[in-house]
Length: 75
Image (cartoon, rainbow, N blue to C red; front, side):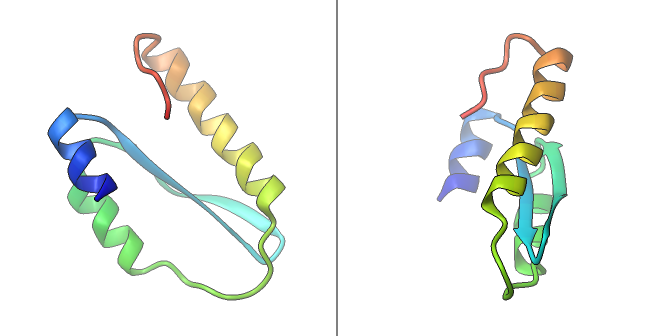
């Protein structure tokens, strides 16, 4: 699983959700795969899928993380 890979590599994971008409940072980048797994379990589903808003929000999160740690490479 993606979370297991992140744990083994000591990577950070984050989660941007998008539904309805908006995108939200559901989980800021973290090294806690437990927090990520717990957050995934509680995500609401349904409605529209504003993909463009989700991609823009993810881009913003990755830009900030890149400023915090220039050695990190987002995937």
